[in-house]
Length: 264
Ligand code: PLP
Image (cartoon, rainbow, N blue to C red):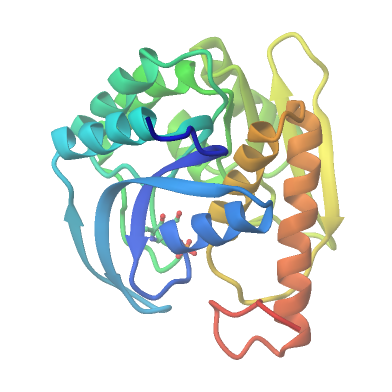
């Protein structure tokens, strides 16, 4: 009989041919935490760093089959979910996950690329909220994503963020990390919100690095921290440090391309 390998992180996400975001980022991040990844590919995208040229959605049953095979072959200790694309994909992922809980699950609710191309069908937003978020340990929207999820204009201050997050928490998302990368100010402040708990903040100096895929990295790094047995706030703290270090390296290298940020 085959030996059960070490614990792994299951990455359920889309590929980005430029390597700036998506699965390539997720796998390198999980590896940086000393863990191996297994995959369920949700979509294949053709991208440069400036534009999304084409998106090919994988069939929902193919996504579910990849997940089931990953669970059958590996000791999966956490799941990271990124781009899903359609409501069919969300339903398929939710069905497989529901049979595997309890398991740490981090959802980066990818709605669009930085270049503005939609990466989730509009009719899928409600399904994401209703079906998938309640199965997750943590959901990590940025400010534009939080606005879209809540159906309101982007929040400009903490009170606005808390107001928009309320219905998502009441709808069943156990915890939200609202990423402040799109806000102003010399600190990048992420707000950690749970029902009935006081908001807490994760802060780092704001760096003006042109690095893509930071949202993918933060969610994957948090999933890796949870797979290693850390509690949620500790895993978020380490993930934030990891992304900050990547941004710092990208800056030091003079950001030759938005996918850099590796090596010394
Ligand atoms: N492409 C894929 C496959 C992604 O998963 C994501 C974000 O998670 C993006 C593109 C968007 O990345 P960016 O905002 O860096 O363009």
